Length: 314
Image (cartoon, rainbow, N blue to C red; front, side, top):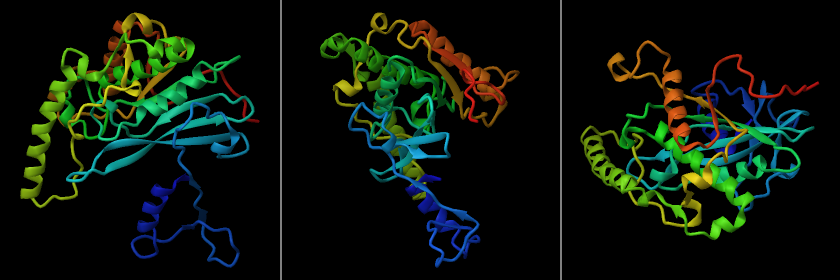
């Protein structure tokens, strides 16, 4: 099971020529029998906050179903196309409780096509759901330490960007609980925060130009671009963040598990070589989130960790 675009890519490799064709997408008895059956998921394109409808969740088994939402994983070098990825809402059908699991994802603040805000809008509707909170656990990648510059993120997140994404989620939650604040002018946009994001985008422009020039010289036309284009997001509601006081405690009851932490190529590149990189990065995220007093619990994803109250699938 997977998003159709991913399955299409897989079938180009497992096609009976490069690798054996072990699956097909048909249960027709007249079609050649394969060991496996492709089961494509149609991505949900958010146009409404209401997602708790059985029709948009694809069944995984009788107990679980999934909602796939497209997100961006960086820009393809020399084009305006982006690498596609997905965020998955995994739902327990009997209780409708669910968790959110991200694939590779780049931050909205430097993306050609920002995509995470729509996911946070959907997640917020489940976090503030009544009478019971339906979503309390999020798995989100943070590939690099906070010292990693934006132009070397290659479609991934670093701790400052994880903080920004959590502020976006918190803003959506507060807006649902206090709708009048959405019309308030007491918000900030990426380009207004002491010029930080504007300076980053300016730096990204020169870094990307240099990267493209070197790639052309070496004949590497298919390399992914290390950064997205530099235009800052338009100051619209979907880019706005409420201030610290308004967001205080907004994520209480939510647990964030940090995943996809990348070991640096050299020991010198890690701030604390004596500790697992996942712990180093998680502590950096935890420190940034703690300063903002969002109320979010931040944990490294480790084998055997329980993510919440046990749910029997029997």
